[in-house]
Length: 416
Image 1: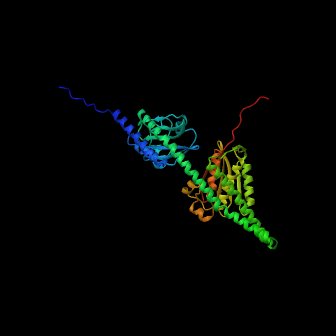
Image 2: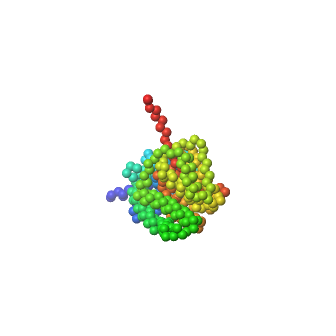
Image 3: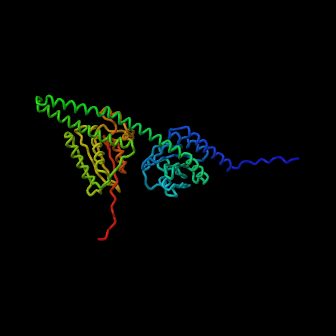
């Protein structure tokens, strides 16, 4: 009589391996059926927390010199989602740039802390793996726990498998997103040409015809007003064309920069003087700290950015209120702040201010515009390795500004 077959009970390791394999297959299948990148990332995190003992987690992707959280789960998801971490010394950027996972069971012991007030107080364990494509770090998958020593080498291995699946889909979705953005910019270009350029061109054409046909019979004041209107509309047309040129370069992903050392204080004063002549009913106040370092940027583009910020401030504030321009330096950057006492801006509108076409409801009611000027500012400033911002001003009004990096100092001493 044959002995009965012996049934071997599955071990915890085998159960975990099977669950991990099934998880990766599920993530791959879900990602293959989606083009919406954020949905792909969120579904991956949602499935991951069924297998790993985690409190929360997030996936952040590199966009330029920022690491932006695109998906998050757990109790700290709300404060994590949308966070931007500029490139620099940090655990997250270290994982991406070295393409090496990082695992700790005690953040405080290892000298780290989570971004976000609630997470910083509660999280102890942290595990992150880079998302890489063609040898380049393109993002980061991290999980965290309020328990100490919550993660093991097997969790690190599992996350590495997940990001290997995600990397190709992230790249594909990024291409799709780039194509969509390119189409949006082309549509904007056509829309601005057909609408925004028509007004100044029509005004210039109409007034020029009047001056040619009836110029000799017009009263001196009427003739002077017509010439002033032509000058103003020509200036408006010139600036629109400048912005459209940047828009077309951004669409092609080629805002080329020819950087040189620039004295920001001197440049800003020159631009403000020109704006004061163009807008004689406006009052501009410039303050700058003495001995500011030179910046490294392209003069033409810095002029365009400063003019756009000044035009924006003048458009949405009363002539009786002065527009303040403050030039300052901190660490390795020089900043320019433009402050007004106009209609103001709330936090939500400030977040969206630099998006293409965006105009806050209050701004739309206050003045006409195409919604591309601030978008152009961000494109130019980021191409010069700087940053822009817009925020409510204490006491009412708006602060808009940007910073640019200080020009490097050549410490080499040559022999005579």
